Image (cartoon, rainbow, N blue to C red; front, side, top):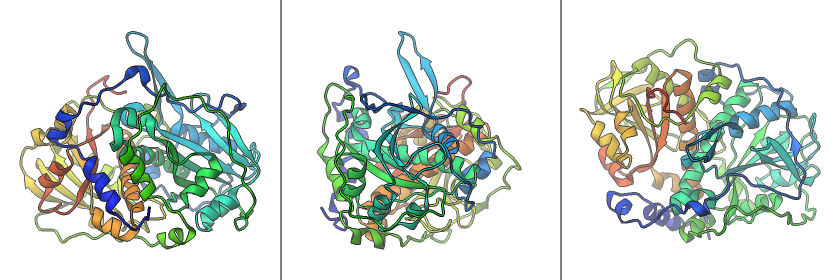
Length: 509
């Protein structure tokens, strides 16, 4: 399939939309006896335990999460790497429910707590770790070596001779095991995998920035080359993005043409059987880059195009001087299961929006004035802000009122009739002009828009918890969301939703 022929993306997006009718006509059910395992296990490979004597990130959460980008060149050793892995994808707590069922919770929010995202490391020799390719297991907090040696040249070459990867002592590769999420969300899970990657990346880049270690998100690479390097089939599990960490003077050389023997390590089965979703597979194949010439033109960003305000705009309030430490926020973060229907402060909402939209270091974005997604809000209860619908302009740092009125019922309905959205102080809807995005990036742009929404959503989570509020990611009735925010949102598509508010006591998981 050709990345520039975008019909497949349009078809996929259309057939995976939720509507009032489609939800009621679905015959899908959760086969609990066939629920996938949450961990990928290589039973024949010895674990390499990661150190646990690292300190919690003490930086102010709003500042670290808002910045995400760091230009320092602090040395990256195994201890710093372990800290980044733990606070982005580590197992932070376990909870046993009546009947003995045990639930595992990790550092970043994830749809359905299904954790489809895996992390691999492509590393040169660093303090405490030999050069090689490794898989990270959160349950054991350990690595397993898949290849020995420095494979940064191959990885940098697969990414169009990417100099950030060539200069990084370690590059993390995020992949998705699609069945793990499809078990519940079916073909629509392709979207969710990028949301889940995004919330993880918000933690990861925030911790790296707090520790003065450079990091970025790279989505331009030849998929088959990266998958082969890691031993992934590219269908059931596939690489999604690359995250170079740190800088070193020992740059990787230009990609070599050395032979890569296939990896055939045994992997423990995830469940008794897997259900295939052809629409998901076609979407991934259509958005894959197959040759070097498709990679190099990628790094030209799409500038944000904001319409002139048509109605009253409200400037953001000044942010608080300080919030909670990032490490504390990550460990206490959960997904709110019920909001208290109490008003949040206008200053709190402004700080959350400002922090979450200050930019992301990614190869499809260039500076804080570029973005693939727009933020719309339904405000239910925010002190000093009239209830209604709003458009947020990060460039102007203002909220534009679209419609005044009490929309608790509408906010709940739009989010699949969930009380969470009705009870929230404010609900943030991510929309994108997909026609514009696909015109610039091809099918790959669909991945990028979903990922950016996930990262920004992850920043919303962390900034909300840093101020003592709660947050929860939600799904939605696609076309109804666009219709509600039109005519302002006409021609756009719904991408993601995050509800914000004061959590009812004891209802975080």
